[in-house]
Every structure is written in C-alpha cells, then in structure tokens.
Length: 264
Image 1: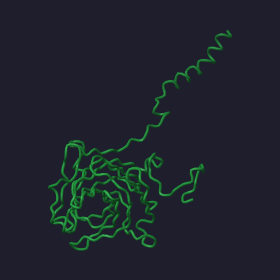
Image 2: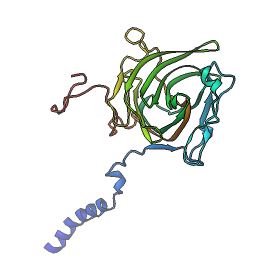
Image 3: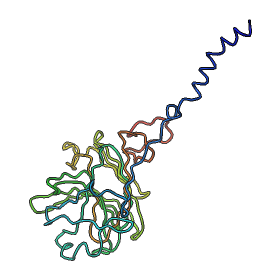
Image 4: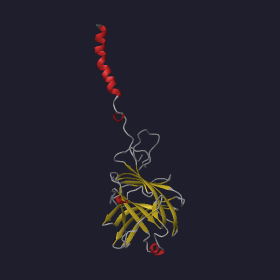
C-alpha cells in the first residue's frame, strides 16, 4: 500500500521532469543576432536593391563596374576631362533599413589621377529623381580620410570640408571603413582599420553643428579619382542589437569604471 501511494505521489513529478527534457533549446537559449553581410563578388549581390545616382554636374549617372571579386571603378570609368571638371564620381545607393546602426565597408584604393584613387561612402544622401542633392562624404585617400559635406546648386557641385584624419592607407591592399550612426543621438563615428575614431555630434542640429545633413537610412558606395574596389558591406542594425560587439563609441569611457557615464 505504501509503495502504491509513493508511486502515485512520484508520477506527477516524473511527468514534469519528462516535459522539461523535451523543451526546445530555442526557448531556453536566444539565437545570436545574424549579421547582414553583402558580398560584391559577381553573382553574390542583388543589383535590384541598388540605385546609381547622378551628381548635378553630370549628364548621367556613372555606373560601377562588376569585377570577379568586387564592384568598383576602372581605368576606363573616368577621363582626364572628368577629373578636371570634378565629374569623376560614381555613386551606388542602398537603403539599409535603419537609421541606427553601423556599416563596415571593405575596399581598396588603386591607381588614380593624383597618384591614387579616393574610394569612399556617401552617408545619408538626400536624393530626388535619382539625382544627388546633399550628403556627407567620407573618402579614404592614401594620405588620410577626408570628410566633406557636399551639396548641389543647380548644375554645380559644392562642398565644405568638415574634417580629416591624417593617416596613411596603403594602396592596392584591403582596408575597412567603419561608420557608427545614430539618428536618435544625432551622432556619427568613423574609423579606418584600427585608426583613432573621428566623431561628429549634433549632426543636423543647426544650433550646434555646421553639418546640416539629417541622418537617414541611406548610404552610397562612392568611387572617385581613379580605380576603386569595393568587396563587401557589413550592416549592423543597432535598433535590433543595441549592444552588438564592435560598435564604435561616440564618447571615450574610463575603463576603470564598471558603468561609466558617457562623456566622463
């Protein structure tokens, strides 16, 4: 009788234990966030999601050229006349789907009109009917990273330098240009390879910044001044993964503090 009562008391617990053993692991362990990495090798990317842009001083948009392992500009893309009239630019736009995130562009610079080319990326362009109107340009030349606010007035391109990072970037080798951007914080941070980080705060705030461009979800590859190659683009959506590893900081933090305050 005692044995029978004990069995009755144990049975519910045995059932519970059995149920726990069959719970799917996906309900216990969250999946690691998936990275969106676009390869520009031939046949690896969807051209329908990209748009070639025309600058106001160009008669038509200049397309990037598909190479076996990259997308870019070649010796035949621009002429000396294009260079002299500042038309040696090819832009290809993409909508990242977020205004809070980070991009990591793998690229190389090659032969150019002034020694070497200046590949780069256009941040948050404002576009109308396929024509570039305004945007922030980050170009990487051999002598440094140049940052410009660019805008069109009629058929003329105008620009203002907003910063430069003096750093040698070796031509004909792969490099990584990173940009962390936040519309909510009105901030962008940029880095080439393992360089110091260049930060702009109050972006788009006319009271506190000389950069009037508002942050949006658009970017564009920008081939300039010669042979440029773009190999891949990694996109991190910080709205979905705000604590994703590798996001560039907007402020330096005291490493001795467990929970340092921004700006301290």
